[in-house]
Image 1 (cartoon, rainbow, N blue to C red):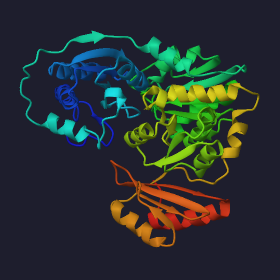
Image 2 (cartoon, rainbow, N blue to C red):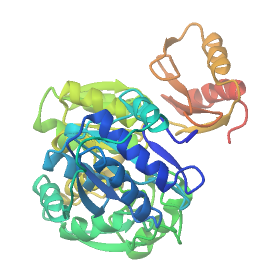
Image 3 (spheres, rainbow, N blue to C red):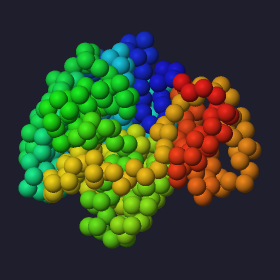
Image 4 (cartoon, rainbow, N blue to C red):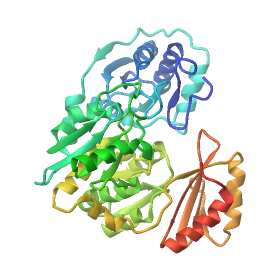
Length: 444
């Protein structure tokens, strides 16, 4: 069990770190911690998910809790089921973008509130590790449900397309995005050029992680080859999306957040929009220009969702490609984000590259990793090196001057520090980057 309980979910290799016996214990622990009388369980396309899901359900029902088994779904579909069915919580069996030998669990409470490192996951771990005695209550029931049609109707009801019919390349990486294409994307008024749509947990074509530029190459090539208006790539469980324009150029997900602000903020003047602290200043500036209230938050879906819920904002976005929406119980929905971008482009003749161009005004490193054993020591060294800067410790350390800023934060699971740096102009950017990288060393 060591090491599989992460900051936001449970994840490990099967069967050495995570097997069916442990899955059953985790199911029982989760239902007990939540005090649940009803839960939803879904799973992705990984072969190990069949046995793990069955064991998880046995553990949950052993507490007297009823389970609605929704079968093979994307993570956003599972979130939708928990919210729309009004259950006391749910668990999605998935390892997201991790390789085929991995699997895991994403847990949520009532109203699809995430259960993470600061909100119940350590308690579930303690219950799973501890002695589990027989429960006096009768075992809960198991029923099956198909939520895909209702889910598609919900997504489609929230998007208003223009008159221009688009041609869109979609790369699902053999993950659960294939179901999103089948049930939702295929109902958009677009022509689809599909790549790797068939769910296959062995990931035969490329890793289902669009944050890695290597995994975007086939999509970019398809956009150029087929003359598409844009490209969309989903990760393994389809809760994240990445985009490229009609020239095949990748659009940073912070800029996607700004594009979503164009779509949603004018509907609700003064609304709060969340962005993670790695995002370009363009996001904050765009939200303000549109009449919204930009709210900066630390990285991680549990933090983002909790803060968005507290502010009752319509949406938030992370550099990782997670986009969260109030109308979907503050959960991440890659397909809704994609639909809103498509709708924006479909309302005129302007290519996506030209819509994005005004947002590409600051040189930016993107997120760069550095192997650092003493992560805390290095952060203190960086703080000491820039004593005249504005500094904050919301997540790692942020150094800010009037003409450049950077954030350096720790990986939760590896001996890595992650850097994002941005400046007003190229000369300042090169100078600042050289200063910070002299402290961090050679990138991974």
